[in-house]
Length: 319
Figure 1 (tube, rainbow, N blue to C red):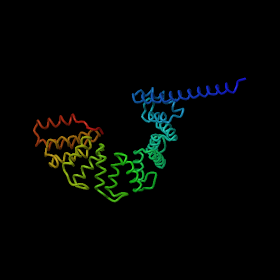
Figure 2 (cartoon, rainbow, N blue to C red):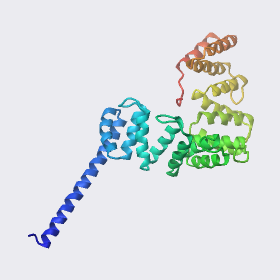
Figure 3 (tube, rainbow, N blue to C red):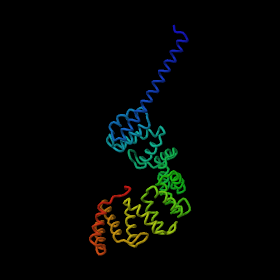
C-alpha cells in the first residue's frame, strides 16, 4: 500500500504531466494556426485549408474565420457562400469581432443566407461594440436608409461620428454629406468641408471631387480655383470620370491652372478611354468630336504627344 507521501508525489507527477501536455498542445495549436495563416498569406491555399480545417472543427474562432474567408473567395476550395456563412457564424457566436462583421455583411448582401437587414443590424452592433469602425459606418448607413431599422438621421449621425473619429474615410465622407444636406444635424458647410478634407487626405476619390467642387463654388470655404484644380487632379489621377471632366474644364478656361488646350485634350481623352473600358460606345463619339474640335488648335506634334500620354496613362492610386 502506498503511503500518503507516495500518493502525494504521484498526484503531483500526474498534475505536472497533465500541465505539460496542455501547454505543449496549446503551443502546437497556436503554431499550427500561425502556419495556416502564413500559408494563406503566401498564397498556398491548399496547405492553409488543411491546417485550418481541423482547428476550426475543434472550435478555434480565428481558424473558422479563415475558412470563411477562403470559401467566400474560392481560395483553395470551391467558392461557397453558404459554407463561408457557416464558419463565420461559428466564430461570431464565440464573440470574434471580425467574424461578427462578416456575418453582418453576409446578411446585408444576402450571400449564403436569405437577405435580412434586421440581422445585419444586429451583427453590425455586435462588431461595433468591439470597436470596428467599418461596422459603425455601416450602422450609420442602415439608419440613414432605414434598412432593418426605422430611418433615423440622428442615429445615422451618431454612428458616422463614432466611425469618423476613428479615422474611417467612408464615415468621414458620409458625415460631410450629412452636414451638407442638414440631415440629423444643422446644415453646416464648414463642417462639410472639414470632413471631406479628412476623407480626401486618406485618398477618397469621391471626397476629392466633392472637395474640389466646394473650392470651385466657395461653399463652406473661400473660393479658390487653384485648390479646386488640386483636388480635381487627385480625383482625375484615380480615373474619376467626373474629375477628369472638371479638370479638363479648368484647363480649357484657365481657372486655377494655366490655360492649355493640350492639357484639356489630354484629360478629356481620358474620359472616353475610361468610358470605352466600361463598354459605352458613345465615348468614342465624344472623343472623336473633341479630336475634331482640337484638331484646329493643336499641331501634329502636340497631338502625337497627347495621344502617347493617354496611351501610357494609368490610375495613380488604382480604382
